[in-house]
Length: 320
Length: 320
View 1 (tube, rainbow over the protein chains, first blue to last red):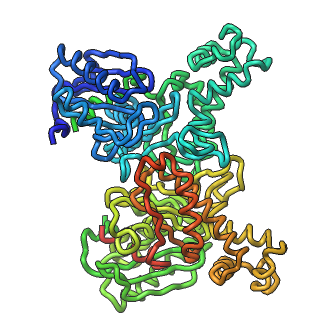
View 2: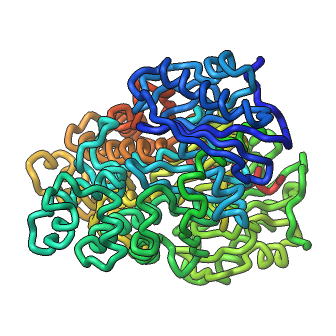
View 3: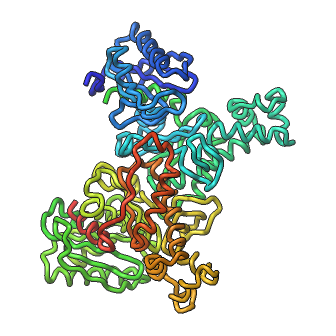
C-alpha cells in the first residue's frame, strides 16, 4: 500500500498537529530537531478543507526541505492501521481514510495517530521521558488526553482507541461530558473546566483581583488569564489551578493502580502553570496511591517540548 | 540464579495458588490439563508456616509426578523479577524472597506472580480468551483483582504492580478500603461488598425470603447464599448481584477508555452468578463506554476455568 510508512528513514519528516482551531506543521530531523515550523488557521468544520489545508502546509514545507514521510496527529479515534480516523470530535471526520487522502495529495508515505499519542511519543523520544521505558503522558489542554508507552512502544490498544484518559469516570452521576457520559476527568481537570469554574466564581470576593485583570467581565477570563494571575501570586487563581491539580493527582493514583507506569509526564496548555499545577497533583497522588509504602512511586514530571510535542512526535512516528 | 524459571519446558509443572484461607496446588501439563490437584488450609498469619505448607504440597505432588518447575500465584505486590513479594495483604510477607525460600525447600526453579495475574494468564492461555491477543481479566471474589494481557504477554507494569483493578477509585470520598483509600471499586463490586450490603438490608421486607434461607440470621448470609438465591429466582438477591454488576460494568467502561482491551473476562467466586452478574455489567458498560458508536466494543465474557484458573496460569507461567 502506497501510504505505508517510510520504515526507518533517517532523513527529514514532516509532523502535522491538527487542533480544533489551528493546524501546526514542522519539518523535523531524526534527532527531533525542528528545522521549520508553521501554523495555519484550521477550517475545522469542513473535513475536505482541513485535508486541503494539511496538504498545502506539507507542500509549502516540502518546497524548502526534502521531506520523506508525513506523520499526522489528530484529535479522535484512529484505527490501529494508523490511517483511518474513525471519529473526530472537532472535525467532520467519520471513518475517514485521512492517510490515503493526504497521501494522494502530497505523494508521500503518511501515518495518522491520535494527537495525544503523538505528543506522548514526542515527549518519550525527545522530551521529558527519554530515560524511561514505560510512560503515561497526560495532556491537560482544552480537554484531557493521554498517551501510554509500554516497553518503548506506543500502546494503541486492541482497536487503536487506548489512553482516552480524559474519559475516566471520576464522579458517578457527575458533570455532563461532551462524550455523552457524566463525571469524566475532563470535566474536572481540563483547561475548559478550570475556566468554567473560575468564571462561575468570578463575582465572589476572593476573585476580585482576577476579575479586574479580565476587565471586569467574567467571560473574558480564559486559561492564560488564570495561569498568569496564578504565576503572579493571585491566591484565588492559585487555588483554582490547584483544584485541577488535585483532580489530576487523584486520577493518576487510579491510573497507576491499573498501569503502574515508570514515569508520568504532564503536558498541554494548563501544564504551563508548572508546579502550581503539578505540586497539588503530586500531593494528591502521594496521598491516594494504593499500596503506597509497599511499591515504587512513579515520578510526576512536567513535559519539556511545550506545544511542539505533537508535531515532533508525529514526525517521528512517520519513521516507523 | 538457581531459582530462574525453566525456560520453555514442555513437561509437567506445578501451579500454586496462595489464598487467604487455602493453598491450592496442581500438577499441570503443557496443554493446561490438570493431572492432580490438592487444597490445604493455609496458616495465613505465619509467613514461614505458609512457605513450609507450600513446600510440603509441592513435595507431595512431586512424589507422584515428575515436576520440572513451580509457579506460585500470591495475593500482593510481586516484583518484576517474579521472585519477591513486596507486600501481601493476607500473609505477613514484606519484601519476602518467596521464590528463593521455596526454591531452597523444593530444589526446583520457581517463579512468583500476583494471583490475579496468574488467573488471567490461565484464562488467556487455556480458558475463555484463547482467541484474543489483548485481554483484561477481572476477578470478583472476596476482593476485586485484575490481570492485563497485551500482545500475548502478561503486562506487569514498571514495578510489577499493574492491574490492581480493585483499587480504581470509583467514588470520591467513598467507602473506606483496606488499602487506606476511599471509594475503591473493591468496596462496591466485590463479594465482600455484596455480602456487606445484603446483610445491611437483611431486615427489609424485600429480603425476607433470603433471610429465611440464612436461618433468620443476617450474619449467616454469605456469598454462596446470595448467589444460590439469585439463581433460584429471588428478586432481592438478583438485585443485589445486579448492583455489583452495574458497578463492574461502569468500571469496565473507564478501564476500556484507558486500555482498549480486545476482550474482557470476568472470573472469581461472584462470577459463578453468571449472566445475573454479567448482563447488568454488559448493560452498564454499553451505556457508559466513551466514544460508543464510533469504536469497536469489546466483549465481556465469563471465565471458563473456575477456581482452577490460578493454579493453571501459575503452572504455565513457570514455563517462561
